[in-house]
Length: 203
Image (cartoon, rainbow, N blue to C red; front, side, top):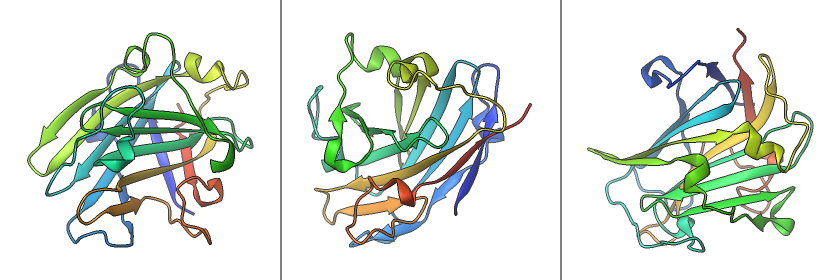
């Protein structure tokens, strides 16, 4: 099983000092040279996320609160915040900042969340073009997670389940990449059995 150690920080992370999770599992028609990497850090108050895509062309058509970012060049983070609890959030961004925020225990009961005031006011995403693709930085406050999972208690040594993805349904050709391998009989990113482990670094 894939395992990633999320570094504990006290402010803005020095991402050069954080380990990278490289997305190397490729599916279907993913073209050569397409790739992605992910980094996580945490404080007592929030998770900090950095995702980066290596793509020759960026598809960015979807916009607005009800758009479908996975149709475009998309970077995704799925995670179960409470150890032993199979409920998860999926957070999907495209280059335009169009976001899908979902909460579920599986694809069959996935609910899209549209928080009052907008997701941007909660996650504060920052998206940048890079010479070889694009990247996004954002934060996930634990207070937000506790609205749905009140038992969320981040602590050094905690191990949660998670996966990172890069995809694009409508790029030509489409591509699908993951960190932890997707081994489901039916290909889906929404099977938590395929998630890897994220360890919260000890103090």
